[in-house]
Image 1 (cartoon, rainbow, N blue to C red):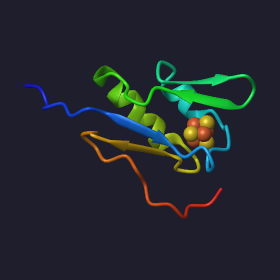
Image 2 (cartoon, rainbow, N blue to C red; image 1 turned 180 degrees about the horizontal axis):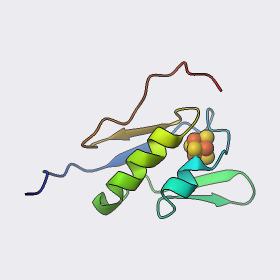
Image 3 (cartoon, helix red, strand yellow; image 1 turned 120 degrees about the vertical axis):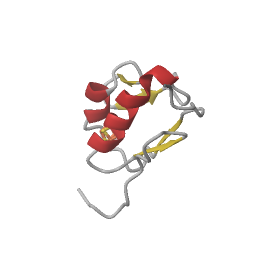
Length: 82
Ligand code: SF4
């Protein structure tokens, strides 16, 4: 049985991002660094990357990653600090 898929949309708050790179390790097909600290990512990752992206969002120490269309809501409340 398959879960109905909704388009996965991904937003990274680059003002909040501290280039820790946890997302790159968690979802290397979606996140990458260009240069030393410039994060690039796929705004609409393939549904096959859903688990990786959810893992990346959960791993981000500053909760900079927001997902929509995910089966498990990944955005975490802000305020955890650094
Ligand atoms: S894990 Fe969070 S802080 Fe680190 S590079 Fe990714 S988005 Fe930025």
